[in-house]
Image (cartoon, rainbow, N blue to C red; front, side, top):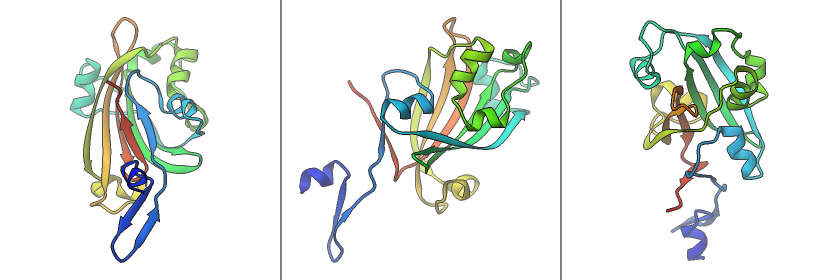
Length: 189
């Protein structure tokens, strides 16, 4: 029983007995992958709900991460992330504007049914091959709790990623907020 508790499969509480918990999705951290590639590798089905997309004035941290002037307006994508139809997180991505110098950006429809990284590779000829990701714990807060179906004080995992091309050019700056009750990171050392 203790093994099941340590693996996060059951919870034992005095007065409540043993409770079977929903299984969390594990993400391994040895290579960079988009959400759909990551879920597919685990035998899960990824789906999305686009909340917003278009060219925007970015926050300073996005301009800095992308190495672009603050006057540049990157393509912004905000969407809910789901596995097997279950809400798991929300992603806010900024893609450098010069990627779209000769092509139109993806539509909300395209991004509802597919991977952003696949779209960038297939339509823009831009491959994501690496990057840097920081992970920290936080609270859902006033901005995201409704979208995630949480209370403002509920815990979340926040991944902040700068993804780059083979030439190490920053392509995407993303902030991905996961429900802590449905997601965890796994790092093999």
